[in-house]
Length: 259
Length: 166
Image (cartoon, one colour):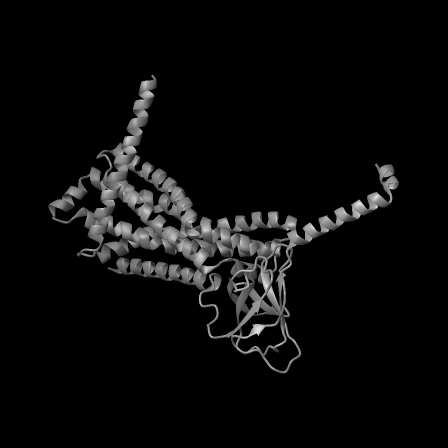
């Protein structure tokens, strides 16, 4: 009984290391292809549409909603200390430093990462990737690289939009509904947020998350088992792995950036 | 072809909107290139600066006129603060600088009080009159010490009323 447990633990650990190795090799291949011709601009633009434009609605709506609830919660806490004037600082710092990049990464994982994994997985199942190889088109070049690059470009832009909409939402709640002084709100917001400690760190985070989500989604899709259950497993594990990796990386980026 | 160009326009709008948001966060919130260099650089030496840091505000009568650019120890181990002020500012040479706190727990800033001299400060000058930061812990410490001393004194002078109270 206990032997089975040990065996399973060992298998899980070995599996983890195996996938880590494979995804590293996969990353190397992507990096190799990405800086060599042909640059498939057309494919990249199409993927930017899929990842970026189609995620706009969910990012803007979620951003505004998160900002509004943050404004409300922040106000309710701050008003006890008579410090509701610093609502802007509380909202701005938490959005720029953490919530913006992280929530955007989670939303994009759910919206676009799962779609990427499912699409590539279906291509594996229906042997479309083999079809491309027969036409002597490298599927890495044609399918994988444009998706990863689109993800890397779209993520920081989406995160910035998320933060902008969230600030708008919290301004709406704080100033219009709860009558915080608009000047005090903007002042504390602009005074609290610094470029090199907060805004730059936010960009770096969303860039790293973009790379992470793009890699996990394409890797899981590319290595999907060639049957229907394989595609669903690839999609599920993309969302799980990319979300958890985002949260773990978030801690380390924050720790390293703060030092 | 028509659908492709609509799609590309949408991508273009997305990229523009994203870049606008990035620019807003960097410039409006981050304060990139907030104010050009080459202003009036003034220095002041204090005994105690509390929590004053670079980028802290410098105000005259509550109006922001510049910011702290550098905080360092001088040869006598006293904190020396360099601030970058608006170059149009005509501060008399006998102006004084004091470190104040915004609100109870707010950031620390420097308040300059203009003096009465005719001559004005030039770039690189050092302020002669400074007032140190007010450190709450130190004041509380002093207060507790004093209270302790007071109660000791009252104990020795009139021990009876205290016993009655208890």
